[in-house]
Image (cartoon, rainbow, N blue to C red; front, side):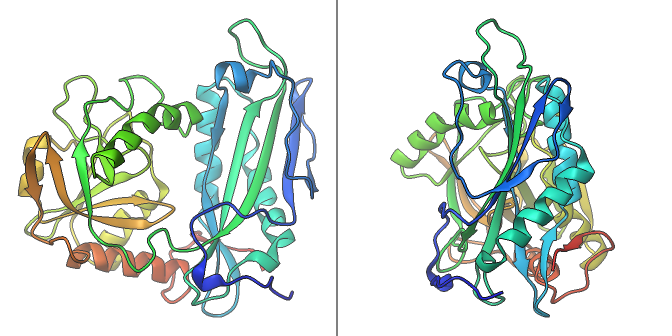
Length: 341
């Protein structure tokens, strides 16, 4: 299929509508088969549950053109599982995991002309989401739901390379113990908006959230998990029941152990020990890993030895290896790559 006339090398990380999107509806206790539609608009009643009580969840993944010309998606089965977990926690019907993957494939195939070419640095971002669609005025779950997938071509999250970030320790709490921090609910991101806007106003790139119960342990940022590297080369990531189980983080930890031969550990990370790490990064679908150069705790600076000019050596190896797997330059573990075309 002929590609769209898009300046792939200059794409930003922003929404650009594509030709088709997938829509399925849940009514009378069952999902319909779903369709691909050209209409990018959603029409809902003014009292729809999603507007009144924020009953919505979403996912994010990417489709790539690999070095050998295939179009692939990275571990969509884990996105399907995580969305099922989110739906259960929000009292929403689970969209079947096999149908989730099938819908991703169909939507990417229908928008093949928007999948950026290999080497452009751009990808096709895939956003599955679900919401309560019928009118609800009493506080209760909806009876009807809509599941949709949109796609949009995006450029690198950081244009000109990933420069180390400066982040602050936030006074806000991201998620309560036993709350919804472990699922990808829209409400988690809504509550983080004020914190990120105020961080930007003060000259910081992101927030570091500590655990709400004791404010002594590192949790995550508004949209990414932390990865640390000790001075002796061990990769460490925070363990908590109230942070999102990042697919990128889980993949990086596997890469650290199985591809790079590094010791890798998921454990509670106390803020007091952050000053002793050699490297720090934020990991997620959009940027894979964003290096952190400095953390500011109410005026007190923690500067990592890796510095403010480039990725630290271990984080760079992790980044290069995982992106190599995603782009087909490095052989992937079994089941990680879903070939679409």
